[in-house]
Length: 300
Image 1 (cartoon, helix red, strand yellow):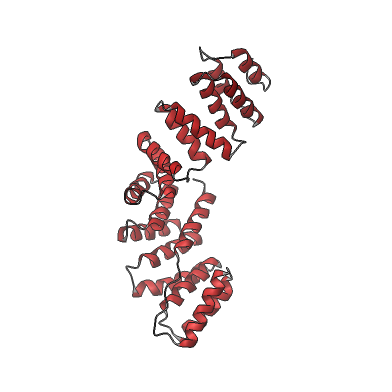
Image 2 (cartoon, rainbow, N blue to C red):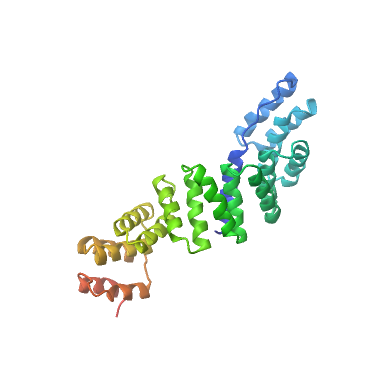
């Protein structure tokens, strides 16, 4: 996965997990007011103002742990990762087994640019709670980024075996299994479940279609490709695969030629794939297929 996508997903999942903790019942009324104001600013994504409000609350009541945790969140969101880590280190010293604190530290470390330390922190959090969806997902993202696809697949397989409705984790499991290799049946099952839960993106749909085809589940493959091109009508390779299956497997000339036209209009330009299609012995409407491909210099 590209680094940009990794950072985007990591931020989305981890920051969503930093839920506002309950304030301690013994907090001073004024400290609680500043804490509540910080929460209001946090909800509005006013990170600097939220941080200032939490700092005011902590100045009045240093034991207000919820304000400390949310201060770290505000600092991290504002890009002050060192400041966030300082707060989180203090919290971790008091509560070393708190998975949320460890995961928040991991996120700050990642955003600071220390992916190795972030991964180590996430792995510690996973050891403490192997079924925390956000933590396992983020650990797996970093494991994949570091090249340890087997660890990512193992973590995600354990999670999804317990939480079979976690479509995002199933999607990532499919990608991890693809990287491990030799696990096409398991990858197909993971992608298939993610698709059923509405979490398969266009890349996953295209990959799942290929896995369906390898398993000779041609109807499923064509349905999957249909979903892919509906989601992204400019996906030329998916249109071409759909055309090939409709022509060669389903012997549906009309829909096959229609899909082929869409592939070419979308910029499909793979000459080897075009030649392989023309080499099919039972290709229907061969002349029409040839003329379409020739119009885009994909046949001679």
